[in-house]
Image (cartoon, rainbow, N blue to C red; front, side, top):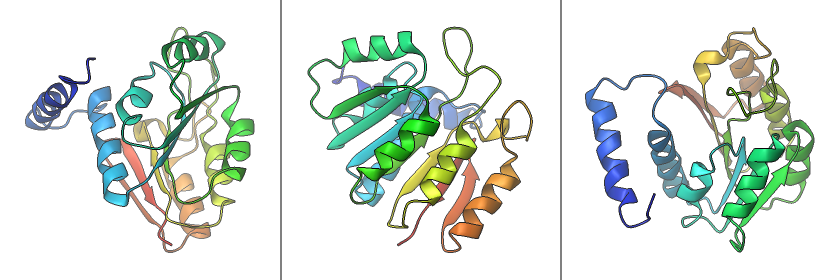
Amino acid sequence: MHPVIRPFTEWRIYAQWVMSGRPIPAPPIVKQHILKQYQARFRLQTLVETGTSSVETVEALRGRTARIISIELAPAIHAAAVRRFAGADNVRLLQGDSTTLLPEVLQGLQGPALFWLDGHYAGSGTAGVGRSPLLHEVQALLARPPGGDVVLIDDARQLTGTGGYPALDELRAAIRHNRPHAEVTVEDDIIRWIDWR
């Protein structure tokens, strides 16, 4: 989408979605709008994403943050993203399993970051059939010292404890056990974890 018309299109789609009763799942552009709200509210200059997918999240946030790191398991999706963002100095695209790569990324991060966890099988052309890396990703984030991170986890409705996904209550309990001061809410199919300092 052209950057000039994006704000108008984003606002129109967001307004239509609200007027239609906020159906789940929200359109991708609505999810990107929510990410932008958190990025602006907490002045976060680093976005770490698991599940590059269509690269629209990277595109939507790259002009708003100093650095984006996106991890993708599927080689073809990663290769397409690398072609699309060739020459974008603030975008780092990694190919591989987020359960391995995310802990490595976290070691190199300084200061708070915005995390968008969406690395799971999403149909034909994507990777990771029958498993979700989410619990491992959350455990890696919990090993990071608290410091103002904001973690948004997509597709809360899928956290049923089946199909390779943890149960929502299990995930919430793990976060609250390790981060008693964290704010953990679910809204619009997105788990919102604010890791207060």
